[in-house]
Length: 235
Image (cartoon, rainbow, N blue to C red; front, side, top):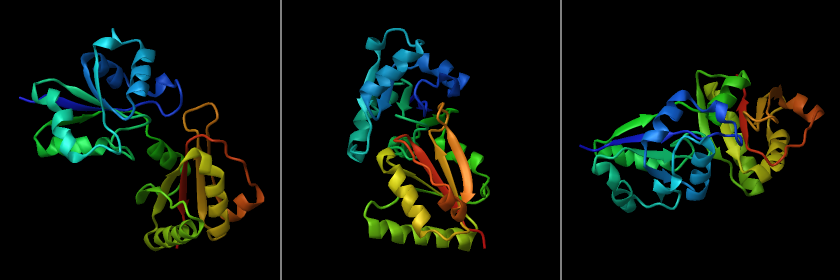
C-alpha cells in the first residue's frame, strides 16, 4: 500500500515560524523523504525548525518547473514502498503558484493519498486583507514582461473584473514591483480599486486598497520584497 503525500507549507516571510500551523510541526518529524523546489533551501528550513533530528538522514529530490512528467514515477518511488513523503514549497503552499501541483496530479492518478497541511498563503492572505470581492476571484500568475503586452493584459483583466464583478489577483518578481505598480496606475480606470499586499507576514507588511485615482495622488516606492496585486472594477 502506498504512503501519503503531504503538502507542507513554508513561511512566506523570513523566519516567521509562528505562521506555521501545529499540524505542520507535528507531521514534519515523521517524514524522511521530501520533494523540494530548492534542496538547499529545504534543508535550511528544516534545520532552522530544530524538530527534525539529523538532517543528514533525510532524503531530498528536486521538483521544480523543469521537472518532466516522465520523471515522477522515479521521484515518488519511496511512496510506492509504503513511505510517506512531503512536498516543500520555497514559499507558501505547495501546488498554489508552485510546481508541486505536478506531483499532486500524479498522486491522484495512482491512488496515492494526498494530505494538504494548513499554512500561510500570500494569495489568500492578500485577498482576505483587501476588502475586495472574496466570493468571486481569479488568480492569474504573472503579467507579461513586455510593456505593450503588459498594458494590453492590464486592460483585459480590468474588463474581466467589471464584467464578472470578480477580483483579479496576480504576482510579480520583486525587482519588477515598482514598474508593475506604475503600469497599473497608468493603464487602469481611475475608479478601479487596486490593492497592494506587500511583504505579507513580515515586519514590513503593507496591505492597502485604494481607487487608482487615489493611488495617483499618493505614489509609494515598493522595495524588492514579494508583492501580491489585486484589482476590482465593479459595474
